[in-house]
Length: 507
Image 1 (cartoon, rainbow, N blue to C red):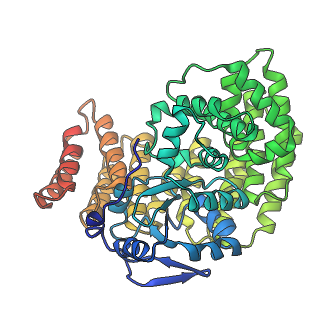
Image 2: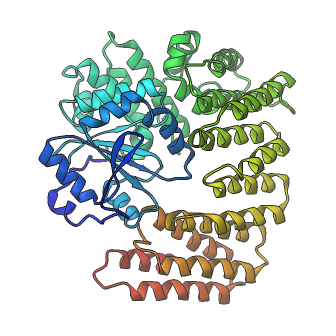
Image 3: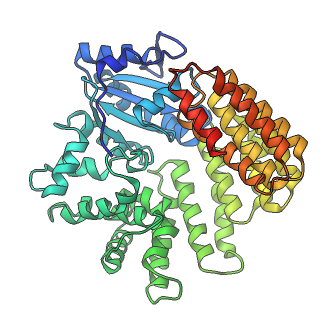
């Protein structure tokens, strides 16, 4: 994928968000209004622009707010750039998401004063590493796209900081700006091989990211598994290296372990033992956030489940309960709780402690600023228990309580999908939910861009699959008829019109 530069002429046509004022939030002069004006200000003041794309309910976004944006170091550095916040539920936000090629929450991008994208910042690392990457991005001599091209040519012209910037680039939110998804693992492997021997830590990090990409790719590239295994074992054996790469070791533990060591292979047991040892150290490392320490426990659960035992070891279950209780009791910040409780409930569920996960989630409904997010987790838990009625009740409540047009469309899509999966015979309820969601679409500005579009694609695909035997033809025709009416009302020159018509054709 190609990094894009934003032409000033395009910025003049950029949608205006809810307010045109500059907001002071936690000491940061966030621009929450006219995005075009923010880029114009960056150009006129010769300052970089920092774009943050997020949502109120999103746990990782709340984690960033609680651990990075509130730090004095970040607040002070924000004076060197123009900080812009785009909430995914703001009017025009999803069209902006399409323009800037941002999808997942959170995505954070640095732009040069002229609007050229410099780099995408990682949201999964700790505050110290994040601030280091931010500093490297602000002082970068060239955009990361040019740095990547130079690295792939021969790498000899790259400075050490440029290699570090590549190693900490947010490949997870790249959205194929630099590399097509199908070539990501292969590209990262090439980068890792090209890193100078004088920077072994950078090489190890790129190798780990390459392994994570390969392990989660639809078609993994050819790779030297012995070399990959050696790198992983070296990182796991060194507490300092393990801490520096905790995000990869925690988030991709089971994936990479399976990629490198097949079940019953001689490499399997030693690898899992070394990985668990490193995770146990990370789970009690107070330099990590509460969410990240819980993530280390979640990874231990994932590895234990891979071992094929009928039940998790009692010692691990005890650790899960203790870590979750500690996190719940010690986390008072509202932003941080949105992240911590989400991770804690997931960990309990993965450990088979669904009842305890339910209790934690239900208690949080009264405290959370976005309780509808946790209702989806309660729905998922009920589904795992086989309680279809309770699951559908929670999916419905989550949709009804959700806030913001993009969020309501996403939650409505989840509710419709759950109805079709769990109660396919209930035509009346499915039709009622579908028509209600589409009625909101008709009243939503930019309803066919980015996350909105994907939610609608999901609804149409589910309806099509449900009606493959033509047993629900009348309901589907009425639903698609309502969507067709929305398409018909869009102006002929509206870029959304062909998107809407494409949805109808796909059905």
